[in-house]
Image (tube, rainbow, N blue to C red; front, side, top):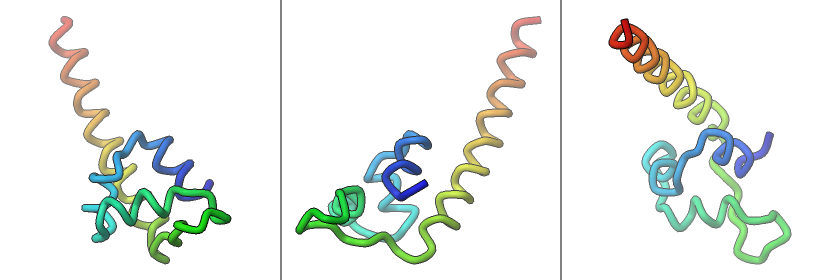
Length: 74
């Protein structure tokens, strides 16, 4: 899974990724480009680790929301 595919799967915006990766949003947009594009910029070396951490955190938040919804339905 490449950087663009990861962001798409997580549904994360360039602005949110910029905050996670400590990069400007415009740089994130360039990281999502095809590597053959002249404006392409490679993502930081630790992008997989940081996005995986975000996914785990977000998964926990979503599980908590699901639990709350199920309890309110009773």
